[in-house]
Length: 90
Image: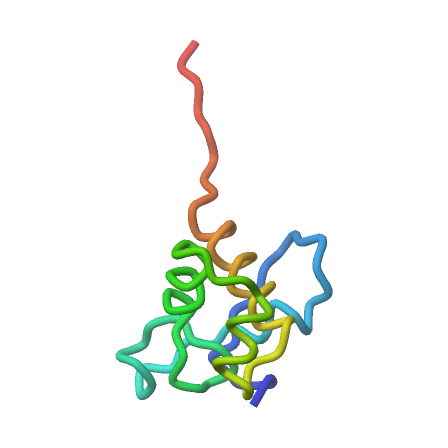
């Protein structure tokens, strides 16, 4: 599952690569939205739970098939997704 051809890879990261490979995109799962390890739990679902105040422990209790690294990978994916180069005009 983690070796999916749809695994997301990042060029620069402080996290171990196997953590980042937990995020997969497959057109057959959740309409191609980023998911956790090819399961039908989207990165957005994890981010929404965290944004609403749920702790990592609460999320893991409610979703026992998730692992702490899945939550870390969701945050890393979100951070990477909003990053962009800043250009300045002389």
